[in-house]
Image 1: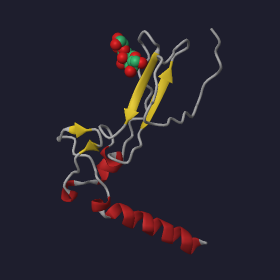
Image 2 (image 1 turned 90 degrees about the vertical axis):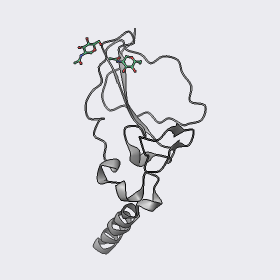
Image 3 (image 1 turned 180 degrees about the vertical axis):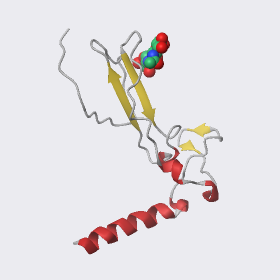
Image 4 (image 1 turned 180 degrees about the horizontal axis):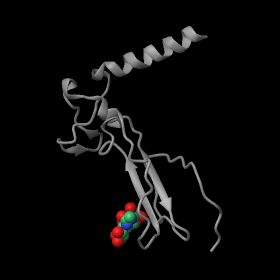
Length: 119
Ligand SMILES: *[C@@H]1O[C@H](CO)[C@@H](O)[C@H](O)[C@H]1NC(C)=O
Ligand SMILES: *[C@@H]1O[C@H](CO)[C@@H](O)[C@H](O)[C@H]1NC(C)=O
């Protein structure tokens, strides 16, 4: 069992150690529909795969009493071109999100904390 855990960890590390498998976004390059151009492999760093901005609650002092903190390739270059992104959305009491659609993406919402509040 331990062997498989180690093997899995190693294969995970190897897959991340070869930066050419990834197209880490070059935030200084223009962004196209498929994302950013790839950074030169020798300039890729561990920081491209780390994003801690979702820890802090967003500022909900506005009309919608809501705040969105995105973690897409602009904030988190390691997800560039993978077709995934994350976001944190905070709502104050009575907060709401405006009507919108996601025509080219799926959205999974996980409620971490809160109570049902009917207005
Ligand atoms: C939250 O946003 C409001 C309105 O922009 C601002 O006045 C306030 O200082 C902000 N609060 C924090 C904690 O950043
Ligand atoms: C205000 O509302 C907008 C739209 O929901 C949101 O993106 C933003 O983060 C909110 N907070 C502030 C301080 O603008």
